[in-house]
Length: 226
Length: 217
Image 1 (tube, helix red, strand yellow):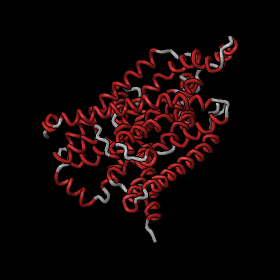
Image 2 (cartoon, rainbow over the protein chains, first blue to last red):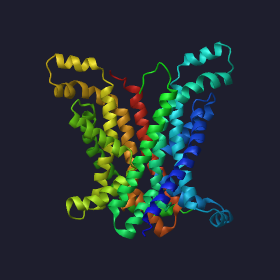
Image 3 (cartoon, rainbow over the protein chains, first blue to last red):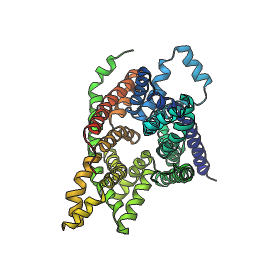
Image 4 (cartoon, each protein chain N blue to C red):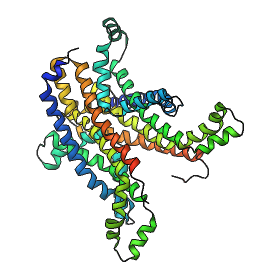
């Protein structure tokens, strides 16, 4: 009995939870970054812009290596020893940090453009009907912006699954890594790589199907359907 | 901290940067024309152009670049019947992969031109191809330029993935030097700064272009 099918399943599982947890972190950070870019205080806007520019303009693979190879060296000696002894799966953590922060800068941009796509009159109208600032966001801006942001966020969500494949370079055993491992055991590289490709295609199709369903349920009436 | 390590190994790092640029230029030069053909096919009314092009674009866009690089790493020797260098197989993988993304940009760009222009072109007696060539494409490409530049920046960042099959581009050289010098902080920080400067300059140019060029319709 060959173990390869089991390896692939393990890999799929790792890909899904690495990307899934990364996505939740990216979404939280992205909302913070996106709103900071339309914040009324100039300094906070600057911080948001700096964050986005920094993490968008460095290749993900370089960021991954920085989190894995360089960041542990910056830590003080005792903290580093503690980390290597007590943190299981250091490479998984590095991959999670790199993926979620890289994705959060992209999510932040989408959220900013979503917020800015709302016409000014909507804000003014909301305030003039006597809503407070918080109520304006709660009842007018966010319900509208959230639905506009869904389609571009679907792309980012698919993106984090595809980008998680880069974690193979630091030996996180996700599905691409497993396909390479099967290749090195069996020399059936093409089959293994095709298998892994099929996994990504199925994941992408599933996400597109579900997001398409959600989009059609919550689409803003009166806008052009995409 | 020992920043001397950068100076000592500068020739290697520069060699890597040169390969990175070469790979990016070859990939962009190959992927853009292929992208135009695919983008036009995606808008074609002929089913034998539309379906294969759409299938190509959707297939490639749902697979990570790393896997496409592996495909060609394994397939190229079978197709050509002899070993090809990792640079060549990486270049082919990039052209095939990025063309799918260029195709979508081209399609969106062409769709940004109003139908009236096509009708006007056809009614003056131009053929379908001439209308595309002389009326639609020149305007569409102008509208596409900011997005195209952004995609080229993404492509430039993507070239770092050629690392996985051993192409000696900038990141590979950085890690090779690191393996000998054990100076991860300095080396990877330098790599990050170099990539950042190049990409930041690129994205600043994009913003300029977006502000300057009003969209044509």
